[in-house]
Figure (cartoon, rainbow, N blue to C red):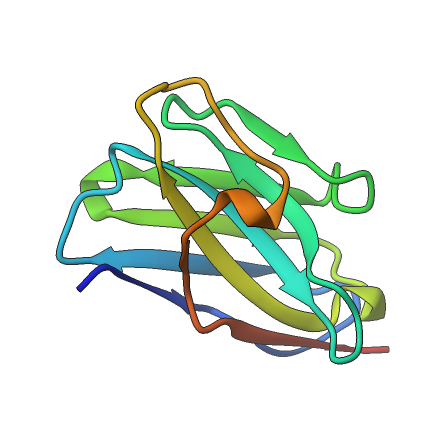
Length: 126
């Protein structure tokens, strides 16, 4: 069964940093384009960052500069480094994947992805 699991969330203070991880079980991520999304209750799922198979990356306007997405294919893991956390970053963060034959492709919209994790909660206190 294809599965991805997020970890690394928690309760932090404004200005702190966190590194979220997304690990795939049972297979390599080498052939997958990947992304992070986040969602607050009552709001739509929001694009955070995306990374292609060859590590081209993209960020939303609200996350550019403080967020860094990366991947380690040898560890079957994608990361999201978040620096200088703000209360507005409070959300459940989701990992998403899609098999891609093109190594340079990344997607910024949720409907492209067919594999999702259960999410990891990030709560930032002011």
